[in-house]
Image (cartoon, rainbow over all chains, first blue to last red; front, side, top):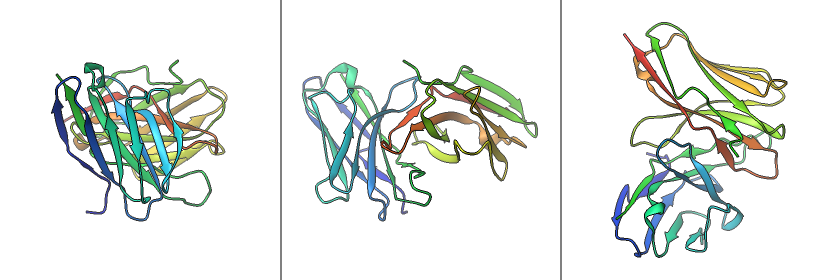
Length: 117
Length: 113
């Protein structure tokens, strides 16, 4: 399967613990995105990378959140000192540069569902 | 500030008929629009997109219409099939300086026999 993969699929943690999620994009894609989705809402943008450079971060991404893409391939999203409000589905997407410029389609992975007790 | 709105939380359509899902937006700087379908416990799946320079794009049973003056787009599915039952999200991107997508809250489509 050559789609976007995410691990783990589910994570249950206690408040105050740190968690880390991994995303492996489609192999030829140079852009990688993180979104968060809560019940009854659409996905909300968190951050994105072009290769290893983090180009944009949402105000939703508090200091407790950090994302990396060290070699421009897979990415990790870490949440420190988790809070119950962090419970959500964390989605990763990737895209590659296509013609015409600026019309890249983002392809999503299955998501990681986080539950903070 | 909800810049992309899907005002119908749910829609029920008989198999074989047309499904029309609507989306309104407020930001005139949006230049690219996409529709995604989402099944439970899966990530969104890309369906179809349209650039702001067009007013229609068609792909098989799916057609997206864009009315820029009304800041409105719609997704038509014809004929509707039971496998189309899912949550549909409209998304928009603002210009070439950012790749982030802004999503609506989704419309749950149910296609019954």
